[in-house]
Structures are given as structure tokens and as C-alpha cells.
Amino acid sequence: MKSAFLLSALTALQLLGVDAAVFPKKIYGVNLGSWLLIEPWMLPREWVNMGGQQCSDCSKCIASEFEFAKAFPSTVDQKLNTHWESWFSQSDVNSLVGVGINTVRIPMGYWIVEALVDRSTEFYPKGGIRQLKRGLNQLKTAGIVAILDHHALPGVQTAQQQFTGRCTTNVQFYTTHNYHRALIWTAVMTALSHLDQDFSNVVAIEAVNEPIMDANLTPGYGTFQKQFVQVIRAVEIVLGIPVPGMPAQSFSTSNFTQALVQASSSSAFSQEVRSVLLDTAPILQGVAGQLSLDLFHFSQNRNLPPLVSNFMDINWQHNNPANPADAAIGPQIYDNHLYYSFGGVADPNENAYLTSVCNLDRIQQDANLGNSPLFFGEWGLPTQFTASDSFLRKWADAQKFSYSKGAGWIFWNFKIEISDLAGDTARQWSYLEGVKRGYLTKDPAAMNDPNVCDDFIN
Ligand SMILES: *[C@@H]1O[C@H](CO)[C@@H](O)[C@H](O)[C@H]1NC(C)=O
Image 1 (cartoon, rainbow, N blue to C red):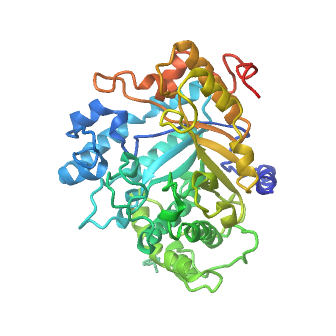
Image 2 (cartoon, helix red, strand yellow):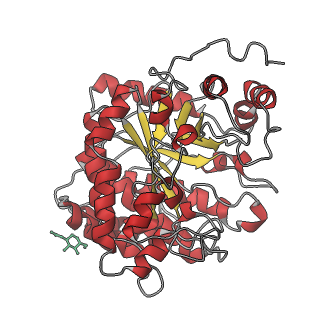
């Protein structure tokens, strides 16, 4: 039902000739991991050269952006800027175009909206937002659409992970204050996606990357899911974009900040959404200043396409999780992540891996709960056993075979450092390296062996 809505909205837009970012019919994507949010394991040599450290418990040394910013307060912004410019550049965009990539997922921390950071207790770099704008512009020119992925949440959403920006067992995301900050981030990203030309290839905003899997440990997450969508749609109503089931509103100002303030007293929105709109106004004005974006001559535009709201699928969590399908207003898409290398999926051998993935039922299981369309937003070639080259070709084919039955797939990661410290991590974790070595085909829609699953399907 939701995909039907999406399709008809998109067809209408195409007929109007609006330059609108839409999801490709099949998503062939890569993650831009370790760009605006560094996970040191992916670039250990660069990390150590910058002044970072490696240790087995990542909370015990400089092994996350938080600890790095804390250790180098006066140089962190300049050091990170050097990284942002080199890790993802025009030549990377050209490489992605060369291998047919049509979508990127961009992992980011909440701190890219700098005013959200409590600088007395939280330490993160500044300046990432300008790099995001630069990268989106390059991707847009290349015809690649983008998902803005809130990957590292205020207060930290999962314990002891570099991908949250801070390795800690003190998980504080699932609280009123931090949900509120995440909603302001969402409002800012929604506004930028519609108002800044360089963001016009943004198709979706993802609420939370990899929350805790046990829903008993994520109180309030279901309410947050609803508020996340309501905030996107509220900002869109201010912009004049029609939202199903919600009344249009007009504002007596061409100052967008002022319109947000006016909307914050509208009875059409819940108290929390109104509070988010009010708090977003000055923060967005600050971001617009950083990006030289004019907020003061806006007019409502009914022809802008709505963003697609995006969540991890319901089956990411267990213990009676909230269903993100219940939060949908307008187009929505779901994200599942699947790695075999961390255990719990299949026995560690070739036959078990291929049997498992060739018979994957996750798309159907999710669809039964309304979580459709679904893409596989993280996967790769890592294994729990030493994989031969010929197995990695099958392993890539078989995963693509199953993941393509849904909305498509997004590989983790577009690249991995190749160095003395990284060793050969790139072999199974880098898309560009995988194509170079022939595990992945140069045309993402193709397979080395389209019949790879024939002998494994039950
Ligand atoms: C736009 O509105 C905001 C919020 O009321 C205000 O602070 C700002 O000065 C206004 N800017 C202009 C150029 O009118």
C-alpha cells in the first residue's frame, strides 16, 4: 500500500517535470561509512597517524570520535576536515559511477548539527555539515541519490560500538531529552533537504541506525518513531508539501525561521512536535549561516516530493518491539542489516551460508508486518571462516540474488583502507575492492553466476 502511494506520487512528479529525487526502481547502493563518522577499524593507519589509538576495549583509549575530540580540542576540526576531504572525494564519486551505484547511505552523528552538542560533557568535531553539502552536490551531479542516516544518536544508542561515535556502556539515547535532540536533528535535515539545492538528491532520512535489539531496553522508542515521522511531515507542511490526512497551512511570512515559529503554535501538531519546531528555528538559522543558505525568501511549494521516512525493520528488535509501520504518514521504507560474520545466522561453512541466504525469508516476514518496501542497508562479504576467492564470488552473487527481491541493497562499505595496520580487511568489506577482485560484478544488476542459488533452494 505504501509503495503504491510512493509510485503514484513519483509518477505525478515526473509528469510535472519536477527535478525530484526518487528511489531508483532497484537500489544498488553503498554506505559512505567512516566519512562523516569515523569507525577507526576501517582506517587504522590513518587513525593512528592522526593521533588516534587502537585497543581491544574501544572505551579505554582514543578509539572513537568522542575520545579523539576530547584529546585534541584545538586541532580536531582541522584534522577531521582533512579526513573528510580525502576519504570521500570526486574521484570516489567517479569510481561509484563507474560501477553503476545509484544510491548511497550516509552515516552521520547528531553532532553534525553543532548546536545539539552539550560542549561541557560532549566532544565532537565541527564543520561536517559543509562537507555533507559538498558531497551531496558531487553525488547529485553524478545522478546518485542519498539516504541521510542518523547513525550515532545523542546519548549513544548502543553500547561499546565505534559506530555510535563514543564507546561506552552508559547508553542514554532512550530518554526524553535525547529523543528531543534527535527530533531537532530530523527537522533540520528535512528542511535542508527541501531548501538547499545541494540536498535535492536526498530521498530519505533514516531515524536510528541499529538500536538495541532487545526492545525491553529501548523504552519510548515506539513513541519516538511516531514523532520522527510527524516532525518530517510537520516541516513539510510548513514548506507547503501536501501530507495525507493532515491539513495544509499557510504562513504570513517569507522568513522560513519565522514560519517554523508560527507553526509551533499550531494546534495541528502534538505538543512535542510543536516544541521541536520552536527549538529547531534558531538552530536551523545557525546551520543556514554555515551553508550560506537563504532562509528568508521561501515560498510554499506544493510540487516538492515528500521525503521517504526510513526505519530499521521491526524484526531488528525482539521482545515485543514497536512496529515502525504504525508510524507511517506518507511514503516510508525499511532497512534490514545482515552480517553472517558475527554469528547466530548460519553454521560457519560454505554450504550453510549459501543455504541460509538463498532461502532468506526476511523480506516476506517483514512484509507480513507491513514493513515493506525493504532494502538491505548493510551487508558485506565477511565470513567466520577463511573464504576462497571462488566462494566469495558465490557469496556475493547469492546475497545479491536474495536482497534484490526487495527494494535492493546497500553494501558496507564503499571502501576500506589498505595498509599495514588494516591488512586485507578490504577484501571482504570494501565494495570497490570486491569489484576489482571480481567477487562483485562491475554491473551491480549482474551476477557472476545467476544460477548460484539453484542447488541450495529448498
Ligand atoms: C526571521 O525570523 C527569525 C525568527 O523570528 C528572526 O530571528 C530573524 O531575525 C528573521 N530574519 C529576517 C531576515 O527577517
